[in-house]
Length: 253
Image (cartoon, rainbow, N blue to C red):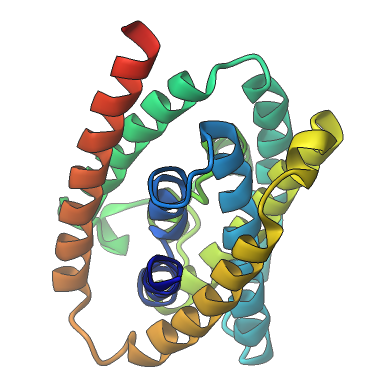
């Protein structure tokens, strides 16, 4: 129970503070501490992240902090990408999905440690480019169960020219729709597996994660974002290395 509480709080805090990172640690926590297999962990993470990001997005909506044009366009294309990738994932082994996830985690850590691109250094993207970006972001969600906020936030800032204070809640909105689309397609394709999940644990995880997200949002303006990102990036790097080694052993040995 302590593992569930601590892990869920960490997930919620990361989403509330950074608008990213929650699902990247949700999947390994479910797999390596709670006994979910790879595919169960991915589907469970989709539910948890959809719940946390959805509640957070509703609160941001009430405050008028969501960029609707960017949210609608990236959500629609993202849901398509998530649905297609969820169907594709049925033909890929869980071990290979975890290897892909480890690679995405390395990318996430690099993004968090890299120098931020300012609006002055970027140009507004065309709708076609935004659409392709949305498809790709949704594909990541449907394939390996991560929300992709570490990619969505910089895409909103650099491609859609969304101010950073609005990019985080807008990212949570997009994550909610992408994760929901992926979860729905997993349910349609493999309802028996979805029903067999430990839903009691998942609901507790999601509930505590929502509380952590509220705390994270309240602290977001008071804590140094860059220091938080660096610290979280190193945690992701350690988790990714462990996942990569374990999954390679399972797949090739």
